[in-house]
View 1 (cartoon, rainbow, N blue to C red):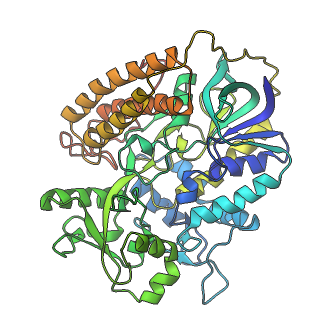
View 2: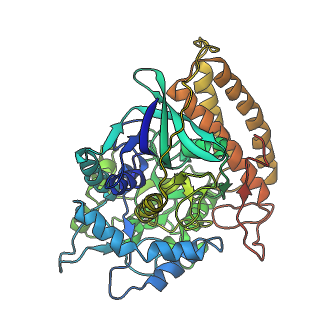
Length: 521
């Protein structure tokens, strides 16, 4: 049994921010299933939304977020987050994050993205996440009070009388499960976009934290709201490489196969409409034309400006044979962000004592039915601080002991092909039946199919020795089930959830709550 004060699960912006803050007072163990910097944060291109310009206000950022959230945001949580934007940016800068400077002043350069009424997105060229991850990881590695365990994946949380007291963790390289006890545990595992066939996220976005939390007894919220990024590079070898929304903020427009600008047919805000509207518009245009993609065109802009502002995207597109400065590039929507998650309060505390959730795995109420662009990294930093402060003020030493992991009743599998088959089946089923546009018929078909898949996965988990692939599959299957259940409960079209059977908004916006005490999966 391994004891620690704080157990942080996940090493994106949220997890590393919390680890840094808590290390001032506690011994922290930071667990990540790959390398320290292998998270969705690393791949974030656009930036961090914050009110730092004299022409902008907290009220305007608040209003833009509420509009994007389509009636489901928790206004208190939104205000708490956006009011600490400048503080979050300055903290990251103090840790060594090099944000792009405005050439005409000493201030940070600001760009604009869909849904924002002002230029308020602070960025590091077009690779903000990479810069944030690099600076935070350098600090984390330098702090002796933080123990980093790479290539470790959590199997399950350990609870006792509604208290989280630790976790069972698989050391992937040693192929051994370790028992950890902790006084406080923080889930910072990211989202679940890998549940879909096409996604802009890395392979690790398999919904682990949501699965862990649900099995521990946590309430989850609004899982039907999966954000599809409108513009990912469409190429068989690109793995849905993300094309930042900042291109549209700087004047790029969407065209169909015939070279027609089509956004004017769908929204007066054109390419700067919120992501759910742009993604549905692209989906509709593809269905009208029968094509597999549309195109994004910024070639009318000065080539030198494109090279200065989007060097990484320009370079990556060229590796696939496309030149941003000369031609339109093929794009398609892909699953990008999980707007719902583990329900938490304003201190990021779940309904299980001493268990917190921060970042994309959580549902703070900030995003509502649709995330406003570049609010996610802001949420990571702001609520990492909120959780850390709450832990500091309420810390109680955990003196529980836990049993070692029991492998006496399982055997080594000779049928690993089942894992890969179920993984592929889930992701294709979710893409086809629970995608950008939904219907009762498709959702019910998905529910029935996932019931059988989940039974097979749980049988396999109970009979054979575990592996990281099996752990991820178990979580993926559970999150797919929860997403379908959530979608079936919403009898309207709101934000990212669009149903052809219920195309209108209900008069009252209510969150979709799933409670493991009331729902068996």
